[in-house]
Length: 519
Ligand code: SF4
Ligand code: SF4
Image (cartoon, rainbow, N blue to C red; front, top):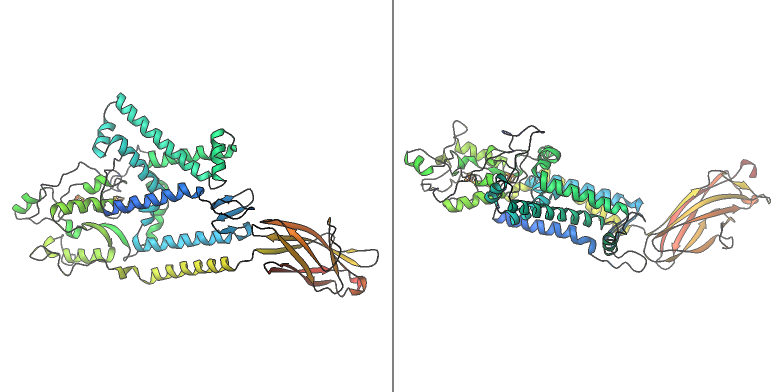
């Protein structure tokens, strides 16, 4: 017999579910999530520690790139238009790496969502992580659910004022730390932190910190679940990525119904009861203010805290865990058909259990192979291909480049000796943080020579020029061909650049223009 006398019933109401959701501009009904404990909560603590740790600490990691490049491991150097990520340095023209990573993140999100539902929302979304952090502060100062509700409903006293001021002050400090950490990604963190506190940082740094402090405080502390319910498009988009084999947090009413708060009495009266004792523990812990027993809802971020809460209740009742669990729609439907004798009536607990109270062998359970299906294979394949392509490109990319721009006006100049001269802007890109000497050679155009404007390099078919580390060097080059050698109005030739030390090289095919009359 189901004995629920040891399970406390909480006065919790789902204030945010579709059934009771207020119009958008109605006053928000406050939610006071109770502290959950269990394996999913522990996993969320771990994810929270890792994600916050990465966010706050990354700008302080150092990476030695030599004397000519910054030593911050991750740096978006907007002034010099460089992105440093440990041993990788991305130039503006290599932005496709960032685009590729964003595409990979998108496809990865599709893969995760089609496999385990909104895991991104429940565990790693910044909104979820920061709301969790703000709730930690709130609980530490004001207490758990009941204490917070009592405090909120009570009159303003000195104690309430002190608690509220303390809570909001710490939230603001977290907001400022969040904004502060963000700007450290754009400048040398140790230098910038000193400038920030001495009032010598750029105004944009203070403005950015202020804006991010305000948004973090507002979204994480004040708006919380409203950001997910009303502002975020992801709950609406995710439905397209779920199928009957996706895992989502599910209330298994095929074993929970008919629910009863007075299971003993009901059973004594000869009626059957399901495993749900209507204790509301799942509602009380929900940070979104919903009741998962109402079915799938766009508000549910699949944080799985209701699973922890209900598992705790099932442990007390001596029932199998998993009344609320990660389940696929196909398993749920199969079990529902079993519990309702093929959909012909209401749920009968006896249909899913054997005489000794155990689950029937016919009950469907999740199997790991359901993760591997055509849809997830396609996502994994696309994700891997993009990743391998980026990796290959990264490992084989050139760190020495030449780009050439032919003068548009004039296209050529006829000199007093009848020779023809063309002008070019030659751009040498030294993409390593070391100085090097680049040898520029021209190939083709017999007997032509080149000279560098503003440099005392003698005219010839080759010259060597030093290029600063991690810099673009722009040269104005004249190419001259004697009159007797002109063979057409437009002939191609090649600028070849080479670093003799590393044997890296690059080439650019340019055009030499001449007048018709010169032939
Ligand atoms: S689903 Fe579980 S936690 Fe929720 S009311 Fe029923 S028994 Fe309680
Ligand atoms: S219903 Fe459960 S999984 Fe969904 S948001 Fe609430 S606690 Fe998290």
